[in-house]
Length: 54
Image 1 (cartoon, rainbow, N blue to C red):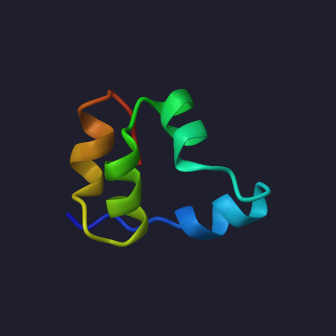
Image 2: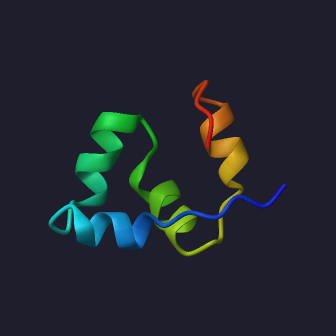
């Protein structure tokens, strides 16, 4: 299953929130956030391993 995100748009709309800030609140590491934003990561795996739903 391919999961797409609007992470880049959401970051801009939130005042250019950093990956570090998102990482601290979600538990998703910064590298994985970059990969999600660029469509390079398996998003469903990133969320599922934390008990989250995309």
